[in-house]
Amino acid sequence: MHYLPFIIFDILALALFSAFIFFILGLINPDWVPQFTKKQKTRKRSCLIYGLVFVFSLSALFLLATDQKKKQDKNDNLAKTETVDTSLPKCFDSIAGPEKRSTKDLPDDSKGKQFHILYVVPKDGEDKQLDTDGRLAGSVSAFQNWLCNQTKGKYFRLDTYQGKLDITFVRLPQTAKEISAAADLQFMKKYFSDSSLFDQPQFAEIAVHLYLLGFKNPNKTYATFYEGSGPKGACGQSGLQSKFSVVYLDANTEEGASCGFEKLTADYLKPAFGDFIIGHELIHSQENVPTCSPHQAGKHVVDDPADIMFSPNDDPQSRPRIWHPYPVLDANHDDYYGANIPKCPDLKDSPFLTGGENKLPKNNN
Image (cartoon, rainbow, N blue to C red; front, side, top):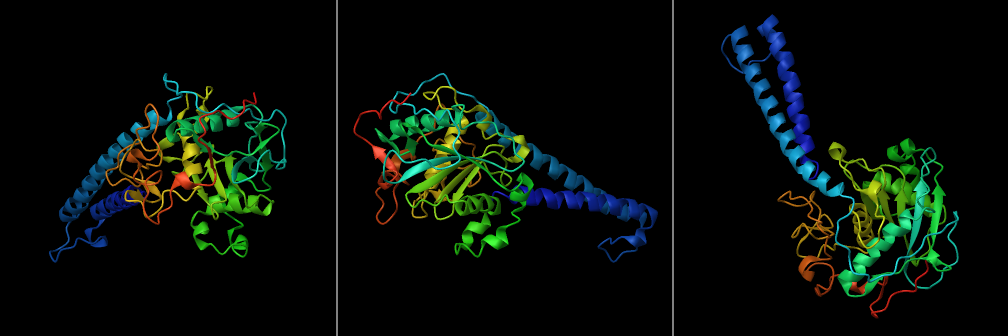
């Protein structure tokens, strides 16, 4: 459903172009073009047929483009909002990021399932030093604080080293163009039996290269900030047996829409739009939203536009997200968190969740 408007647009554009060509040819010689009638071919009949097709196609294209522009404007306005005035209650103490860059996974402060942060730049990509300037740590802290408020004290366990967020910098040996083209995909298929992974070729290209570079700890899921673009319309993707979540910091979204990554929060108590896109992908990595959820569509929910796992692309009503002032975690708790659906996975049971003791983690600032 997500690509249907683009398919219709392409068909109408082809009809418009063809009608114009046949209109001109019919003026020159009506015998050169089909007129879909047993009557004698004439210039007048040819111009009438292809003129009407031209006018119809042009009108339909205009209406479709106007409708898509209105929908996109709604999402753009939400995505380009830096922060709101309302601060969330302090439930999770912010975690400081590293001051010195590391190109390897450092020794862990804690055991158990945890998210490890990667800052990944293609061979020819710009290194904006988000790993050491505090922006990634601030964004992750903002999502954690929101999650803590939503779950009454629980948050994801993060990989830390000596009390600070452990972020690994990776410079990939492939250029951004090579990654977008997924040039190594056929080669990589011999390493992985999960064929569904390769339905997302750009994500697979990044994730599998990271896996082959050694990021394969069985207790970790790798939250990857990629300094480049992904498939058209995607702010992020998750997969590879739930080992990787990738957000595209220079996302290739329709009509120039923003995912909000250029405006990550400067105050972790006031999360920005992009901080929730990151959190959205982390929740995806925990097998959410499961197909057994009553309001699931395309691994998202479609019952409430305020839900962090809501997607306009899968919503049959094509409603925009309404993450204002902040999204909610499983609206009504009937799909993926605290839903208690028999034999259906539930985020509240994730081994990556910790906390709930009504006390803050140690302040490491």
